[in-house]
Image (cartoon, rainbow, N blue to C red; front, side, top):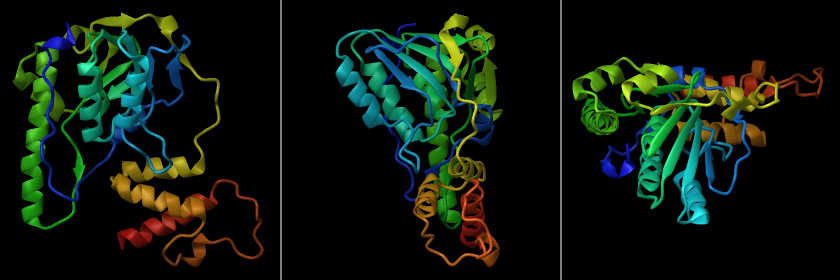
Length: 287
């Protein structure tokens, strides 16, 4: 199906003060070590991280994709995706950029394309997915703070966003809108074969296109903390602020004595100091 038949998605207005969190189930299914087995070339864009900027500057942003498309110019482009999703607005912007690209766009789902990343995947003229790959769709998930009027306004705005996504999936797959809405309500994960059967992908990706990096070490302690906070539905803006404080070693709040090493403790950081600081800081922010 050509993306030329897909609509441009206009960004709806949202209440002030809302933030987006990565879906915990999508984050748990995300394996950051999944990459392309074939060498990237100048006409390939890799989306192999969360959508939107993280506290450490990682993440896939619209400005990065815009720059890549400018560098590629008027030629076919391959977009490789392994992402648990993230910021809805950034995903929307990236979808529109790929949809507007003047030449053919081939999307390859190497690992998972969840939430905002699944929207991006829909922009492909053709969508290829690994047999062991996943596409996950769900309703928009926000974090909002305020009284019942703010919550009511937020709920009304979320319904508009959900309808926008359902319309995109309906246009791409040809499935019934009610069926799509039910799938979003259920937070549906689709394997590669199911994604092809339901129209969320066109063909299975050859097995030799997908590989795992040789890195076997776990994530750094700070990245583990950030992932845990995301699973606890802490706003990404708060995670960025907290992690910057921890990485600089100057938390803005006074910490519990239990979170600080004593004079007799070893000065070597085994990766748990940052975790202890983060947990203490989290207790204070949740108090």
